Length: 67
Image 1 (tube, helix red, strand yellow):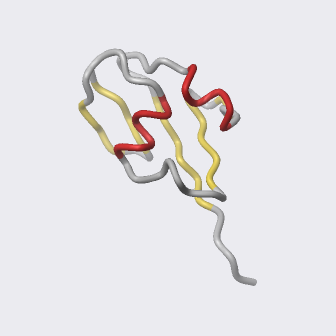
Image 2 (tube, helix red, strand yellow; image 1 turned 90 degrees about the vertical axis):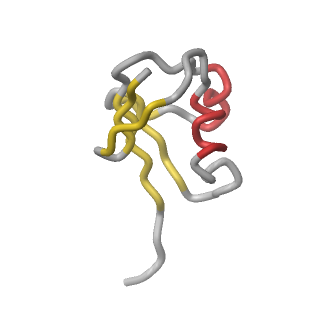
């Protein structure tokens, strides 16, 4: 199935959870990230429960330090 992740097209196998996708993309151990699926913020405790669908739009935002 096809997803958009931060405006890049990504092909993944069906049935994956948001948590599994983030693990594959090396974000699972990261703190300071926020994730939106189809423009809705998804809290971290919900990541394993969110089953991704074809054409989902995922936005991953990473907090940075600075001023």
